[in-house]
Image (cartoon, rainbow, N blue to C red):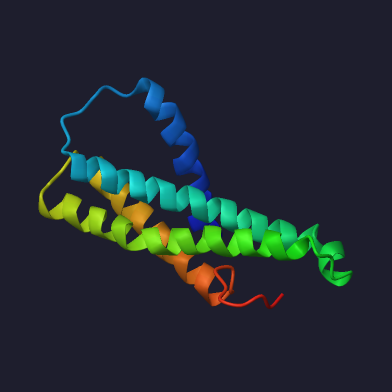
Length: 138
């Protein structure tokens, strides 16, 4: 889980740098959108997990005192995690598609596959630990 979270954070940071350095490659629109969905899912998972860890550590005072401020924070974390969970199938589809149609270099396909694996692991973590919750249980 920690490796997936680290991969998600590093991919998001490198993505920002690569936007400015990248040459335009001849990719179809679907490939670009699937890669964008993968990176967005990883960034969203990173935000959701970090926010949930903050709520568990620093926001404990809010939870103990039953502060009204905790419910919007929890709902925002839930919504963020659910959006990452819903983007995960697109990440997997993009990785499978890149191998089937040999899109990009081998290193790009391996990176896309690792990003999809990280998205699946983070989705499992968010669902298993109720970061992507369905109720307001704290």
